[in-house]
Length: 337
Image 1 (cartoon, rainbow, N blue to C red):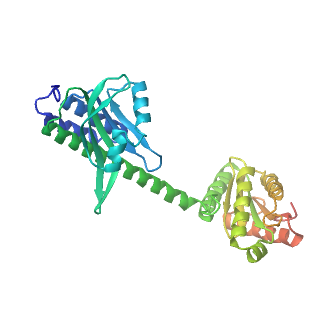
Image 2 (image 1 turned 90 degrees about the horizontal axis):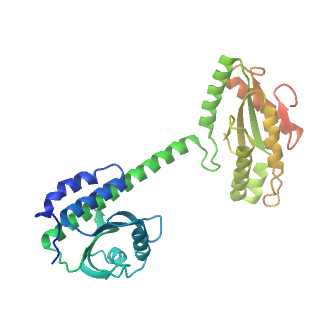
Image 3 (image 1 turned 180 degrees about the vertical axis):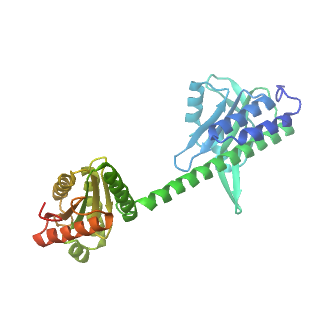
């Protein structure tokens, strides 16, 4: 019979497997766990498949002893319910000394062990670790114990990596939510205020200009009242999309109120950008039978104001002038723009 491996006691390799499992990168951890298994038990191949919650079927995560073509063939076969890797995931029970034939027609004996983690009394299946040997072969109790330990380490490494990824995604989400308006995806009032302060400070140092444009959706309250908030939200998202697409890379757009949007534009091109925004919004298709338009008020630093508070006040006064002039109007702080 074939030997279980080159080491007299395969358990001597477990400290190396534990060290491998602590690697920060999951691919490195899983490959290291398999490598120690090969050193301990001497299989011809060692493979880990993972059940990815975001993708259908099993995904080949790590392998030792397979060339590229063999790995691709094994990955394809693992999608079949009758394949040992898939059947172990379905049953959550190990399969020992299972005979199979590889793609070259060679007979092999395999051991397949589920990757399981438990939390709060709930057991979760993460995938399968499998090893194969040429026939004849019988896996000893010590070898089975080592393989199960390797599977446990692989499960813990996978679970740790997924938790770390989830934590990073949550942190990124909270960071994004802290700076963006959740309905439209553009900057929120807090972020716009910070950008405005920074741009005014830069312009003050360099003797430059900053334009601030406020946009208000015409007849928005009427649309909300008669057609419902779903239509209102659709209008808000469409206006925000036009704003984001119409401005320059140096500009910042945000939503600062129910139906009020803002543009912070470094330099003297604020009025040009504001008109471009208005033209883009005017070209939008009707929403629930309503044409969409915005009125805009523009103020300039340092011409109309010397600080953020007074610049916002000047733009607000200009917006009031534009609203009085009729839908789709633009007004400057001192005269119609």
